[in-house]
Each structure stands twice: as C-alpha cells, then as structure tokens.
Image 1 (cartoon, rainbow, N blue to C red):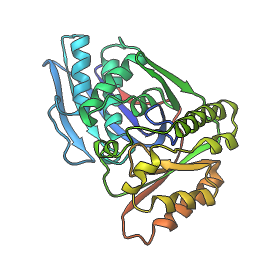
Image 2: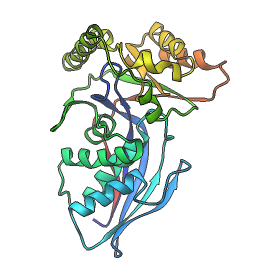
Image 3: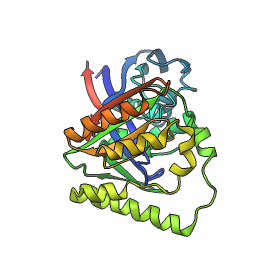
Length: 310
C-alpha cells in the first residue's frame, strides 16, 4: 500500500457520568485524512483544510506528533505525507484533536503494514492528545479507534473495553459557535468531591454500562446523570440548562456536555425521538443570537473507516 484515505469520526467523551472514562463515536461527522509514502524520510503535513490556525509543523500538530512517534518506534526506509480535512472545528467538544490523533495512528499503521495493535494505536493517539490538550486522555481517541461505546477501565495499565450499542440508540448534538478550550474547562473542575457524589457517579457509570449490555433504554436514561463535572462546567455554555430540559421534555433519554463543551449532546431511542429532540433543541436556541450547528447521527460502531487505498 502506497496511499490510504480514511475517515476519523468525531466523538462524544464523558457521556455524562463517565468523566475521562467513557466515550462514543459519531457516524455523520469527522475528518478525512490521507497518508502517502514518500522517498524522503520523515513526516510532512502538506494540506490542512476546514480549520484555521493548525500547525503544519509535525512536531506541533497532533497528527504529526503521532506519526513521528510511530516511525521512531517502527523505523522504515520511507517517509509519510499527510493531508487533513477537518470536518468540524477545534474546541467544539467533539474530539477534534482526537480525530487527528487517532486518524494518524490508524493511517500510519496501515502504511507500516499493521505492526501495532488497536490498544497500541490508542496509546500513540494519546501522545497526540497530550500535545494538543496538555493531558494524555484516552476517552475520545479510544472511541475513534475502537468505534461504538468505550470504557477506559484503567489507565495504568491502559485497559479499553468496547461496549455494545443498542440498535435504536441515536445522538442529537448542538454546537454553539463559541470555543471552550479543554485546558480552560479543566481549570473549573473541583479538586475534591463528596463521598455522596462519588457514590452517585460511579453507580451511574455501572448503570449505563448495564443498560448498554441489556438494551435497557430506561436504565440508560436513569444513568445519564453527572453530579460532579456538569455542574462545574455548564456555566461555560450559554443556555445549557434550557437545551437540556427541552431535549428531555421532547423525549431524549438524557443530555449533557460533550467532552469539555460547548457541544451539548442528547441520546435518544429511535428516529422519531430524534426528530422531536432535534426540533426542540433548534427552537430553544433559535432566538439566542448565537450561531450554531445541529446534527443527528447513529452511533458509529466501527470507528475509523478506510475510504480509499492505492
């Protein structure tokens, strides 16, 4: 293989109760990236479209950092040229740097003839996340690499569990056109939490995992509650409480902050619920004088997709 073009999905991290430990992949939004072997060794980023301000320097770009780390671990007699088309903006809360990082790990691995496992690709992707956000978090990148719902059971050692996705589970998300940087969103988090809140939170994680395994949509709904992170971050997102309440009134199983925001996600059962929730969220934001994008999607169960090879 001399060339590969891939689709790296956007992702929703935390999924309410699962801060830094749960994520899911989106089917209808993501980045397209291409990787081409070159005779000159090293990594070059030759094109970036769809987003402003991203560095072409591979030592300062999440995708470039991942590719360089992989070539250092697995030296070869060729170089790799990368192009990136960003399908959504950085700072959206939909895993923009994660899509770049995970896409690079997958694409480079294919050109290297797949020497690395899925878990190892996640570890390389985390290097890109650290370069972009300052923290090597796995929730977004593992969701992009594995697809579907994921649970990061442990970071040391890294242990990723792919969870089942009920067939009627759908996503609706609104991205207000403001930026919330991950670093800023982390600064507002509490240093300590009460034992009562901790018990509530990990019980909800257990309930959400159980609901996914048993196709119990009511249990999924009951478990989509965040008593720790959402209360600390929601003030960063204009009209968050309104959007969440209107989504749930319209039939959403639950709603919350996607990653560090400002995107707000809602999970729904079935396409009819999606239409009602989509309309309710649109109406809630229509007169707020803030531009926004609104989309719905199935859950992407396969993760990164190959679009073309040569």
